[in-house]
Length: 145
Image (cartoon, rainbow, N blue to C red):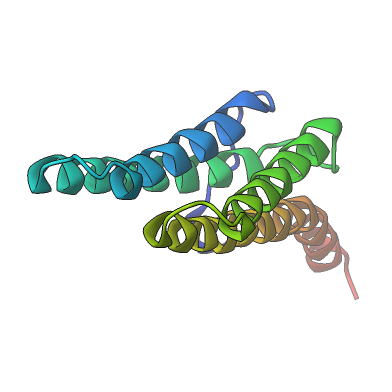
């Protein structure tokens, strides 16, 4: 596969992508929403959210680069859940009663979830097309002209 991505052999999963998305967003919200946190606790929560964001990105890559050669039910569910988290974060940012930092974090999470959704769809489509195009090129290379 291109760019060093190996195809994942695991079965498709739904809970890991959505769960990591929710945990990352909730940790980030907790870091900015808790007004009584010490500076150390806020920094620790922010670093935890960054680490979870990395795990979230890696899980998106794993789910996108599975061996299944077609777009499946799990892919649709993952896409819908990521889009749903983006809408939920936008709703929090649009409500009139959250504080300024919570609204800003809601907007950042909206952007992040939308980017994750687009990234998942793009990577999954690339993973589906790559084996078909490599099989076509290997057939054309092996046939005598």
